[in-house]
Image 1 (tube, one colour):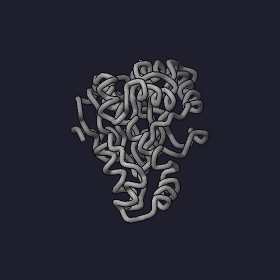
Image 2 (image 1 turned 180 degrees about the vertical axis):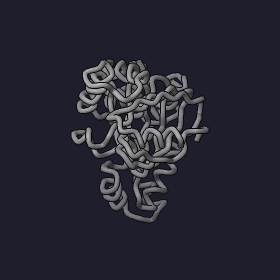
Image 3 (image 1 turned 90 degrees about the vertical axis):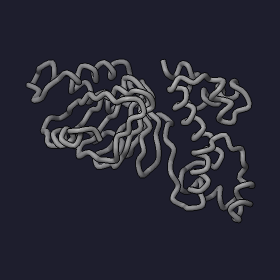
Image 4 (image 1 turned 90 degrees about the horizontal axis):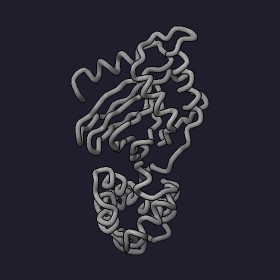
Length: 257
Protein backbone atom coordinates (compact mmCIF):
# COMPACT_ATOMS: atom_id res chain seq x y z
CA UNK A 1 0.00 0.00 0.00
CA UNK A 2 1.11 3.57 -0.60
CA UNK A 3 2.27 5.74 2.34
CA UNK A 4 -0.53 6.93 4.66
CA UNK A 5 -3.03 4.55 3.02
CA UNK A 6 -3.75 2.86 6.35
CA UNK A 7 -4.12 6.25 8.05
CA UNK A 8 -6.64 7.41 5.46
CA UNK A 9 -8.68 4.23 5.84
CA UNK A 10 -8.58 4.53 9.63
CA UNK A 11 -9.91 8.09 9.35
CA UNK A 12 -12.70 6.96 7.03
CA UNK A 13 -13.66 4.02 9.25
CA UNK A 14 -13.79 6.31 12.31
CA UNK A 15 -15.92 8.98 10.63
CA UNK A 16 -19.52 9.38 11.77
CA UNK A 17 -20.58 10.85 8.41
CA UNK A 18 -23.29 8.84 6.61
CA UNK A 19 -21.13 8.74 3.48
CA UNK A 20 -17.65 9.82 2.40
CA UNK A 21 -15.96 9.96 -0.99
CA UNK A 22 -12.21 9.37 -1.36
CA UNK A 23 -10.43 10.26 -4.61
CA UNK A 24 -7.15 8.44 -5.33
CA UNK A 25 -5.16 8.11 -8.56
CA UNK A 26 -3.02 5.01 -9.16
CA UNK A 27 -0.19 4.47 -11.64
CA UNK A 28 -0.22 1.83 -14.39
CA UNK A 29 -0.22 -1.73 -13.01
CA UNK A 30 -0.19 -0.54 -9.39
CA UNK A 31 -1.54 -3.01 -6.82
CA UNK A 32 -3.54 -2.30 -3.68
CA UNK A 33 -2.71 -4.93 -1.08
CA UNK A 34 -5.31 -7.09 0.66
CA UNK A 35 -7.40 -5.14 3.17
CA UNK A 36 -10.95 -4.58 4.43
CA UNK A 37 -13.13 -1.66 5.55
CA UNK A 38 -15.58 -1.24 8.40
CA UNK A 39 -17.97 0.55 6.05
CA UNK A 40 -19.60 -0.59 2.81
CA UNK A 41 -17.68 0.64 -0.22
CA UNK A 42 -18.55 1.43 -3.81
CA UNK A 43 -15.27 1.26 -5.76
CA UNK A 44 -15.52 3.25 -8.99
CA UNK A 45 -12.86 4.27 -11.50
CA UNK A 46 -13.57 7.27 -13.71
CA UNK A 47 -10.59 6.08 -15.74
CA UNK A 48 -8.90 2.71 -16.10
CA UNK A 49 -9.86 -0.89 -15.36
CA UNK A 50 -9.58 -2.68 -12.02
CA UNK A 51 -9.29 -6.40 -11.29
CA UNK A 52 -10.63 -7.11 -7.80
CA UNK A 53 -9.69 -10.31 -5.98
CA UNK A 54 -11.61 -11.62 -2.97
CA UNK A 55 -12.21 -14.99 -1.34
CA UNK A 56 -15.38 -15.53 -3.41
CA UNK A 57 -13.66 -14.97 -6.75
CA UNK A 58 -12.46 -12.33 -9.17
CA UNK A 59 -14.20 -9.35 -10.77
CA UNK A 60 -13.15 -7.11 -13.67
CA UNK A 61 -14.38 -3.53 -13.28
CA UNK A 62 -14.15 -1.21 -16.33
CA UNK A 63 -15.18 2.48 -16.43
CA UNK A 64 -18.97 3.09 -16.23
CA UNK A 65 -19.05 0.14 -13.84
CA UNK A 66 -18.28 -0.11 -10.12
CA UNK A 67 -17.97 -2.83 -7.52
CA UNK A 68 -20.13 -2.97 -4.41
CA UNK A 69 -18.01 -4.13 -1.48
CA UNK A 70 -19.87 -5.08 1.73
CA UNK A 71 -18.21 -4.05 4.99
CA UNK A 72 -15.56 -6.45 6.24
CA UNK A 73 -14.80 -8.01 2.83
CA UNK A 74 -11.09 -8.77 2.45
CA UNK A 75 -9.98 -7.80 -1.05
CA UNK A 76 -7.08 -6.63 -3.20
CA UNK A 77 -7.09 -4.57 -6.41
CA UNK A 78 -4.86 -4.66 -9.48
CA UNK A 79 -4.91 -1.66 -11.81
CA UNK A 80 -4.93 -2.25 -15.57
CA UNK A 81 -3.28 0.91 -16.84
CA UNK A 82 -3.55 4.12 -14.84
CA UNK A 83 -6.65 4.19 -12.62
CA UNK A 84 -8.44 7.27 -11.25
CA UNK A 85 -10.47 5.80 -8.40
CA UNK A 86 -13.39 7.41 -6.60
CA UNK A 87 -14.59 5.36 -3.65
CA UNK A 88 -17.78 5.89 -1.66
CA UNK A 89 -17.78 4.70 1.96
CA UNK A 90 -21.26 4.24 3.40
CA UNK A 91 -22.42 3.55 6.95
CA UNK A 92 -23.81 -0.05 6.97
CA UNK A 93 -27.09 0.91 8.68
CA UNK A 94 -27.98 3.15 5.71
CA UNK A 95 -27.83 0.40 3.09
CA UNK A 96 -30.13 -2.37 4.26
CA UNK A 97 -31.79 -2.50 0.84
CA UNK A 98 -28.49 -3.21 -0.93
CA UNK A 99 -26.97 -6.63 -1.68
CA UNK A 100 -25.02 -8.43 1.02
CA UNK A 101 -22.61 -9.87 -1.56
CA UNK A 102 -19.73 -8.36 -3.50
CA UNK A 103 -20.78 -7.67 -7.10
CA UNK A 104 -20.18 -5.44 -10.12
CA UNK A 105 -22.86 -2.86 -10.80
CA UNK A 106 -23.61 -0.33 -13.53
CA UNK A 107 -23.00 3.37 -12.82
CA UNK A 108 -25.58 5.69 -14.37
CA UNK A 109 -24.57 9.10 -15.76
CA UNK A 110 -26.38 10.70 -12.80
CA UNK A 111 -24.51 8.63 -10.21
CA UNK A 112 -21.21 9.32 -11.99
CA UNK A 113 -21.73 13.08 -11.70
CA UNK A 114 -22.88 12.76 -8.09
CA UNK A 115 -19.71 10.82 -7.22
CA UNK A 116 -17.59 13.50 -8.86
CA UNK A 117 -19.42 16.17 -6.83
CA UNK A 118 -19.09 14.17 -3.61
CA UNK A 119 -15.31 13.97 -3.99
CA UNK A 120 -15.17 17.71 -3.20
CA UNK A 121 -17.42 17.54 -0.11
CA UNK A 122 -16.13 17.76 3.46
CA UNK A 123 -18.19 16.42 6.38
CA UNK A 124 -20.08 17.15 8.51
CA UNK A 125 -22.99 17.87 6.17
CA UNK A 126 -25.39 20.48 7.49
CA UNK A 127 -29.09 19.51 7.29
CA UNK A 128 -30.80 20.72 4.10
CA UNK A 129 -27.44 21.83 2.66
CA UNK A 130 -26.29 21.10 -0.90
CA UNK A 131 -23.86 18.50 0.49
CA UNK A 132 -26.61 16.72 2.42
CA UNK A 133 -28.83 16.65 -0.68
CA UNK A 134 -26.01 15.19 -2.79
CA UNK A 135 -25.45 12.47 -0.18
CA UNK A 136 -29.18 11.71 -0.11
CA UNK A 137 -29.33 11.43 -3.91
CA UNK A 138 -26.32 9.09 -3.93
CA UNK A 139 -27.95 6.81 -1.37
CA UNK A 140 -31.12 6.74 -3.52
CA UNK A 141 -29.06 5.80 -6.60
CA UNK A 142 -27.20 3.07 -4.71
CA UNK A 143 -30.51 1.36 -3.95
CA UNK A 144 -31.23 1.02 -7.70
CA UNK A 145 -27.89 -0.31 -8.95
CA UNK A 146 -28.20 -2.89 -11.78
CA UNK A 147 -25.95 -5.93 -11.28
CA UNK A 148 -23.63 -6.99 -14.15
CA UNK A 149 -22.21 -10.46 -15.02
CA UNK A 150 -18.53 -9.69 -14.38
CA UNK A 151 -17.87 -12.23 -11.63
CA UNK A 152 -15.60 -15.25 -11.90
CA UNK A 153 -16.31 -17.56 -8.93
CA UNK A 154 -13.47 -19.64 -7.46
CA UNK A 155 -14.16 -23.32 -6.71
CA UNK A 156 -12.71 -24.91 -3.57
CA UNK A 157 -12.43 -28.45 -4.91
CA UNK A 158 -8.68 -28.99 -5.62
CA UNK A 159 -9.47 -30.82 -8.87
CA UNK A 160 -11.54 -27.91 -10.16
CA UNK A 161 -8.95 -25.42 -8.97
CA UNK A 162 -6.36 -27.21 -11.08
CA UNK A 163 -8.55 -26.74 -14.16
CA UNK A 164 -9.36 -23.13 -13.35
CA UNK A 165 -5.76 -22.15 -12.62
CA UNK A 166 -4.71 -23.62 -15.96
CA UNK A 167 -7.46 -21.77 -17.86
CA UNK A 168 -6.60 -18.57 -16.01
CA UNK A 169 -3.09 -18.78 -17.48
CA UNK A 170 -4.15 -20.32 -20.81
CA UNK A 171 -7.70 -19.06 -21.61
CA UNK A 172 -7.29 -20.14 -25.25
CA UNK A 173 -7.02 -23.82 -24.26
CA UNK A 174 -9.80 -25.76 -26.01
CA UNK A 175 -9.48 -28.95 -23.96
CA UNK A 176 -12.90 -30.53 -23.51
CA UNK A 177 -14.48 -31.77 -20.32
CA UNK A 178 -13.67 -35.30 -21.46
CA UNK A 179 -10.01 -34.32 -21.94
CA UNK A 180 -9.85 -33.06 -18.38
CA UNK A 181 -11.62 -36.18 -17.12
CA UNK A 182 -8.90 -38.33 -18.65
CA UNK A 183 -6.17 -36.05 -17.31
CA UNK A 184 -7.58 -36.00 -13.76
CA UNK A 185 -8.74 -39.64 -13.86
CA UNK A 186 -12.32 -38.87 -12.84
CA UNK A 187 -15.63 -39.03 -14.68
CA UNK A 188 -16.64 -36.07 -16.84
CA UNK A 189 -20.06 -36.05 -15.13
CA UNK A 190 -18.33 -35.73 -11.76
CA UNK A 191 -16.45 -32.63 -12.95
CA UNK A 192 -19.61 -31.10 -14.39
CA UNK A 193 -21.62 -31.69 -11.19
CA UNK A 194 -18.81 -30.25 -9.07
CA UNK A 195 -18.52 -27.15 -11.28
CA UNK A 196 -22.22 -26.43 -11.01
CA UNK A 197 -22.29 -27.06 -7.25
CA UNK A 198 -19.31 -24.81 -6.45
CA UNK A 199 -19.60 -22.03 -9.04
CA UNK A 200 -23.20 -22.10 -10.26
CA UNK A 201 -21.79 -22.55 -13.79
CA UNK A 202 -21.04 -25.40 -16.15
CA UNK A 203 -17.44 -26.03 -17.20
CA UNK A 204 -18.15 -24.37 -20.57
CA UNK A 205 -19.74 -21.31 -18.96
CA UNK A 206 -16.79 -20.87 -16.59
CA UNK A 207 -14.30 -21.07 -19.49
CA UNK A 208 -16.36 -18.57 -21.48
CA UNK A 209 -16.40 -16.22 -18.49
CA UNK A 210 -12.62 -16.32 -17.98
CA UNK A 211 -12.15 -15.57 -21.68
CA UNK A 212 -14.52 -12.62 -21.57
CA UNK A 213 -12.91 -11.17 -18.45
CA UNK A 214 -9.43 -11.57 -19.91
CA UNK A 215 -10.75 -9.89 -23.05
CA UNK A 216 -11.90 -6.89 -21.01
CA UNK A 217 -8.44 -6.55 -19.47
CA UNK A 218 -6.72 -6.66 -22.86
CA UNK A 219 -9.16 -4.34 -24.59
CA UNK A 220 -8.77 -1.86 -21.73
CA UNK A 221 -5.01 -1.95 -22.33
CA UNK A 222 -5.55 -0.84 -25.92
CA UNK A 223 -5.27 -4.16 -27.77
CA UNK A 224 -7.32 -4.59 -30.96
CA UNK A 225 -10.49 -6.69 -30.99
CA UNK A 226 -9.14 -8.98 -33.72
CA UNK A 227 -5.96 -9.70 -31.75
CA UNK A 228 -7.81 -10.30 -28.49
CA UNK A 229 -10.32 -12.64 -30.15
CA UNK A 230 -7.65 -14.86 -31.71
CA UNK A 231 -5.42 -14.86 -28.61
CA UNK A 232 -8.31 -16.10 -26.48
CA UNK A 233 -9.22 -19.01 -28.73
CA UNK A 234 -12.20 -17.65 -30.69
CA UNK A 235 -12.46 -18.77 -34.31
CA UNK A 236 -12.95 -15.22 -35.57
CA UNK A 237 -13.49 -11.64 -34.35
CA UNK A 238 -17.17 -11.94 -35.26
CA UNK A 239 -17.56 -15.05 -33.08
CA UNK A 240 -15.96 -13.16 -30.20
CA UNK A 241 -18.17 -10.09 -30.80
CA UNK A 242 -21.30 -12.27 -30.83
CA UNK A 243 -20.37 -13.93 -27.53
CA UNK A 244 -19.45 -10.55 -26.01
CA UNK A 245 -22.77 -8.97 -27.02
CA UNK A 246 -24.72 -11.99 -25.76
CA UNK A 247 -23.08 -11.60 -22.35
CA UNK A 248 -22.92 -7.82 -21.96
CA UNK A 249 -25.64 -6.57 -24.29
CA UNK A 250 -23.33 -4.45 -26.45
CA UNK A 251 -20.27 -4.66 -28.68
CA UNK A 252 -16.72 -4.49 -27.21
CA UNK A 253 -16.26 -0.91 -28.46
CA UNK A 254 -19.61 0.21 -27.00
CA UNK A 255 -18.79 -1.37 -23.66
CA UNK A 256 -15.97 1.12 -23.01
CA UNK A 257 -17.87 4.20 -24.19
